[in-house]
Length: 487
Image 1 (tube, one colour):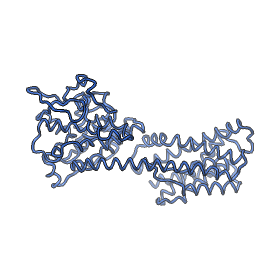
Image 2: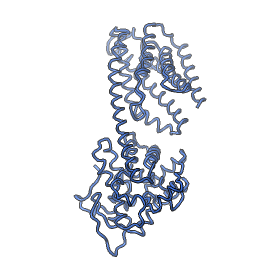
Image 3: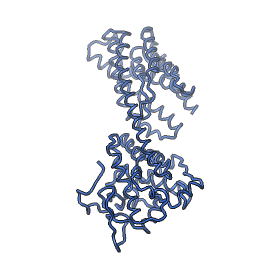
Image 4: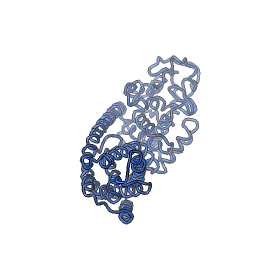
């Protein structure tokens, strides 16, 4: 980590020295002071938690504007000094890294602006000339600054948390790309006000007003995101209160599913829907009889059937929560099987939503690596082999391959239980454990439920062996009007 930060600092110093040699240093004192004041104010207006790990700051606008108004050396100094004074509870090494990164962005961005034909404002005449010789080069420099920011952060995140750089880069560019384009447009307007419009330093005041409004909007977005998180937390708490044996299970599934999203090349919105669905995949347990989740003495076909309703019931419980709309299919179908013998709808293969297939694998893997009364937890590689034995039948082979890739990159600790916890779990059926579930289904065939949603009236099937799905994998046997699918 220290070597990486030192390398970034060295790159920033070299770029500033190169800019000093190649380009005349800044001489406009008013512009320098104005940009420095704005840079320092950016730390005051910075909003560090607007949800989804997003921080709002207008320093990037100041850096790219400085590249045009006071050149690459001035832009580098504005960025470095502004970040050096932005403490925000950060460690010294973090401030050094951030200052170096901002300085590097300023110097390289300024040099790129000049390299692609960026002009001095005093030589520009007419709107077309302004657009082509200032606006276009400024936007190119803005994109370069975004890439520098993304690449350097990808490296630091890789070292600190092990997150693969490619995944972080995709997320960073997806989340911040549009914002950086907006930064470039605002910077261009700033430059126009300062130079061609001859407003000078007062243009900073005109620019600050809309930026403050934008900050307010981002703060409101952050409040909404935190409200979503509180909703998720309350629902997960309800599940874990009903089923104490599942404590921590939802969070582990969400983490593992998010890791698996990277080798599967899932988009940002799809990953968010996956994480929400993983957190709430068992929310339907709230409607399952408590005796089935604590210590049932025996399992009857009706009991097994009642337990299978939890995935469809989960959708019923959360379908009115708007921000979960993209996660409903993942909640409903996380117990479908690749061979079509799952529940509640008997979907097969690619008919099963991808987020459901990911949760199914993560769910089973976590169950296998958790201590149970009847067996100790499997080691991660042993659990992986159990999963691989069922690929092409229970699990999507591509998702199983993604799990194997993830386990090469991340450590996965087993979930241990003490003697008291194990004693409380005796008789507990972990429906996510593929081994335990296969044994129960083989010895205690469920009643044949309809696939029309949670809570159907059961009816026994006499003298007929039951396959591992009530409709033998053929949901077409059920009238369309009776089939309930996630919205």
